[in-house]
Structure formats: C-alpha cells, structure tokens
Image 1 (cartoon, rainbow, N blue to C red):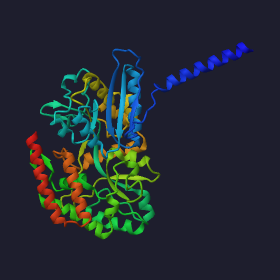
Image 2: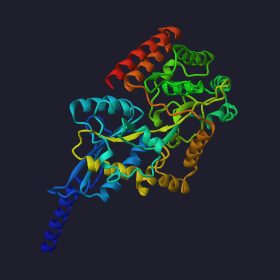
Image 3: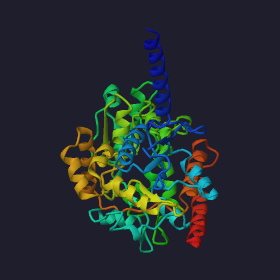
Image 4: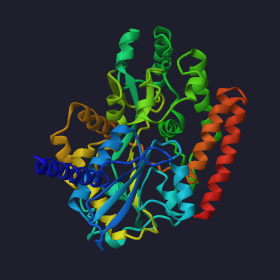
Length: 447
C-alpha cells in the first residue's frame, strides 16, 4: 500500500510539472502590460533551433477581425513550426500614433497594416520594397491589377492589398421599423436624406437620424461633383466645396436629423462601440467590408446602401478602393519570411476562408470565386454591394491626401470648431482649406 501511495504521489508531481511547462508554450495569448490588446501567439519552435524566427504583425480592427486574424496566424504557425508570430492589435484610435513612435525608435513590427496612407510611409523610406520576392516567396499573378497599382510607387510594389471595398451608408432597418419610417430606394438623393433623418429622430426616443459622414464622406461628396481631393500633384476642389459640405451637416443638425455635437464627438471607429450599434443613430457611413463586424455586434438588422445621389449630376460618387494593405518594415531582419506570410495571408484558400471579406473582397481571383461559392447571406450582401457600386458609379479611386494623419486631424478639428460654434462655417472652411494647401505643399516637398 505504501509503494502504491508513493507511486501515486510521484506520478501526480510529474503531471503538475508537465502541465506547468505546457502552460507557458501552448499558444494561448498573453496580454501586453500596456494595452491588453497586444498578444503573443507562441509557435512550436524547439529550444535551440537555429532557424527559429519571430515576426511581429500589427493591425487594427474590431473583435471579429482580431479573432479571424489570430486564427490564421495559428494556421501559419502550424504549417511553419520554426515561425512564431507576435500579434500586436488594437482599435483604430491611437494605432498610427503608436506606430510612429515605434518607427522613430527603430523597433516597428515586421508586418504592418496600413490604409490609404501607405504612400506617406513609403515616402518616409520605412516600407520594404517587395519586388525581389515577387514570383518567389510572393505570388501576385492572380491579383487585381488596379489593386496592385494602388500599392505601387515609383515603379516598385510596397504592399499586398487585403481586400476591395467601397464606402457605403449603413441603415439600421430595425430602427426604421420602430420609427415607422419606410426604407428608401437605393437610388435615394440628398433631398430624400434630408427628409428622412429628422423623421427618424422625431419618432425614436434618444436616437438621432444620422451620424456625420466625416472626411471620407467628403471625398464621396466631391466625386459626385466630378471633383477630387488630391491626385498626381494637383488639388481637385475649392474652399466653396468645403463650405457646402459643412453647411449640409449644419442644416441637418439644425433640422434635428443629425446627431448633436456631444454625441458625434463620442463616436468610436470600433464597430462594437459605434453610434449605430449603440443605437445613438439609425444611419452611419462605413466601409462595405465592415458590414459583418457591425451586424455581428448587435441583434438589429442592417442594410448597406450607396451614398445619396447628387440630384444634379446623377452620381453617387462611390468608388471601389483598397481596404487595407499589409506591408513589411524596411528594417525587418527577415524580409523573405515577411513576403511568405503576406503570400499565405492573401493567397491560401483555407486562410482566406477564415478571413472572409472582413477586410474587403479578396484581390486574388481564385480566392474570390471560392468565397462566393460558399458565401453566407451576409457575405452575399457585401459582394452584391460591390457589384452595385461597379454598375452604378464611374468614380475613380483617389488615394488619401499626403500627410494623412495630420490632415485627418485638421479635418476633425475643423468639424469640432463648427459643432460648438467657435467659428462659423465660412471661417472654419477657409482656414481649413488654407492650412490643407500648406500641408500638401510641405509633404509634396518631402516626396
């Protein structure tokens, strides 16, 4: 009996030791002390393996994007046992502030998610050119040429496009029904919009008709007028266009159709905390690839619409555009492995089935066909919207303004000056336009 008891104790102690050892390397995410959203997904690297490599990958998004991306990272590690991926993810707020700090310190992630501001970072010489890896580690043969062109600067490729998307208007169908307001036609106009939004506010308790469409909406507004922000070294609009945009929203607030300033400034770009999911508004502008994330964050039913048409030009101004890019850090110690991961992320069928269209419709033609064949009802809505934009709009893709972060902050500050009546629309618009021209000239000189 004593021998049996001793054997039991020894076996139990060995089990505890093995379990403790496993807990430190079983692939579970460990929270970063600073943000709580920065995780390390451990690979199966054996200690002492000379080929063991760690890659840091950074992106922003909502919880659904985080979950999907982490699952793909686990798949990649399983297929590449010598690779460990450190996942650094967060919401959009503060993402580029942190990245700029990392770049200044020379310790940026190996792989970084960018939006339409990729050009700014390319011209700062912090992005890895991918030309040497195309056809070897990275296959782009089935990628949309227009999306490749969007990531090409001075003849060199600097990123892989993660998806094709288009700006749209998200309507909370459930709130429309509660308000007793009929859903509009998808050929609606700004006049329709101005009639519908005050009615929603009036008929809903504590919910406003719409949130402001902000800077991205201004770009669509310009395209409806056959204008653009900035392209090929030229500014494509005047101060009067800025005044017209801000006056449109001032009139909507005055009519009760748009959210009051205190609500608008509390808006979050995280789907789960967005004004429409929180039922603060019934209408909000989003990128089409976000439909799944917004729908998954609520029990309400959503539909995505094109922007209200300009009744004079007959245009909705919506264009197909790259959603985000993955690009490599120019100082990465593992450029070949960076290119291999990018290839896996956009070309591997199993990986892209997990990712779905969270970052937009994939740019690999075979991947798109595979996803359409097995698309859910929600995914079909996204693909149908992309088709609708393709059929109804000839608006070209316009890259973000040079000095994206600085100019986006300028636009936001201008909005808030008008919101809280610190300046008139004319005063704030003139000041915005003048400062924007100065910023563009500054960044153009740096290029």
